[in-house]
Image (tube, rainbow, N blue to C red; front, side):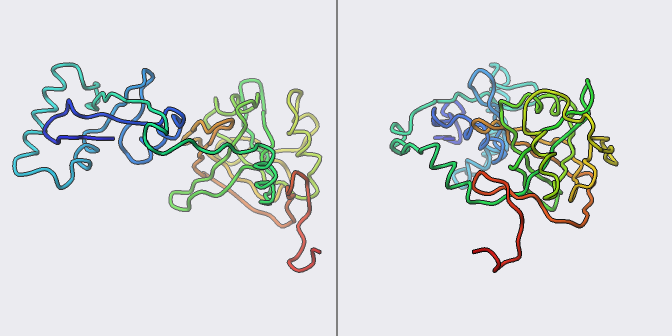
Length: 264
């Protein structure tokens, strides 16, 4: 974002890469600048402009800035909440002097990232038509204060929209004895909870798989589009852990945990 003259809002614009729109939209929110509107313009917080102006402002600038904001409101450049409509120039990486990004082979990406071992979870909620859930390996602790976790369901998932509509979810961490549970939730369609033992979580009432290794009950805080997946941030409301050994996913295969030094 560029404010070429801190005394002239008409010289304010945002320049973003057209091949990285999702990253640009996320950066606006992450850096507390504003949000991208559906028409491609941005809604920018005036405080972000104060930070952007920095040391270039002189005595009396704040009063002049207030006058500029008042003028912007008179000509329709501000939203009802006081944020400014800012023009966005979408340009290529070459136009920014960054050059084209090298292509990444999908199979190589999958093979390399598959060397990162993960656990396996079932994320579930009680939707309008009953319990609904999906299996996922992309789950991780995100923050201790506030308590946050992240989940990344595929955008092709038919179960996730039903879970998202509830505004909550509960994650059950599967044990190595629950491979069959993982397999039933990894497929699309059918009643995945038929004949399965589960109980409602303590806060949201979302399903907890009986005998799971741990469960984490969450409220959905944020959903960000991330390529072919959704990045979901959940605020932890309740949780519990039990004994046992986790189901492990490594190199596109299920595995079992072994003590360090025993694997050859």
